[in-house]
Image (cartoon, rainbow, N blue to C red):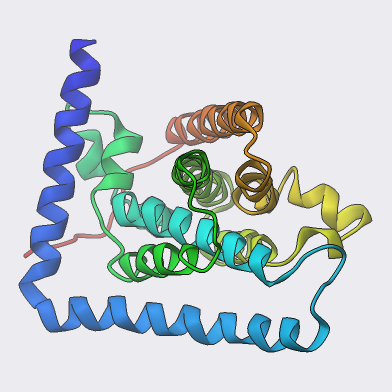
Length: 264
């Protein structure tokens, strides 16, 4: 318990430091947030136009898309606001920059993931919250399930991306592969899942866990399914275990980088 408290205190201190660092350049910080909010709104405009024309697709309506987008955006925003280096992990491994984190008396994986905040992810968080206001689901149970499901989606986002980037330990610099896999998760998560069948649908529930950051949390909220939330939590725990093991097994193969990096 004392170790857990120490790790939590470390994470909170790290997050405060990340935020303070981002606020040093407030204009750029705010512009990134606003820019991402607008980017999400422009993307979602496609679905507004689409459902204005067709009303429904395989049982999915506009309200479902609002809910889906709110969960995906909030989950992504939460995950990479607090653990932004999950998007940069392959580069850190390939350039030998793990040396710094190996010297810390903390969990290597937590330290490296939490040491950077993705500023634009705050724009995703804001967009997720605003989008939820259009869902019409304002009962205490629905709001609670939306928040909890989004938090679990955040865990799955971060750990799935960690898994993809950890392939660098075996494949060399796997940045391009990891980015493609991460983009696939995000892209498939933002589409009505029922339009996918066969192999693609199978991938969404396995190798590319897009369903667990999109349609599964959506169904939990839509049907007020507390049992489904527990199932989602189990999936998040399993993905966390697998990705952590993947990282630490790869860490045994890690060799210090020869490049000299100067931090100012």
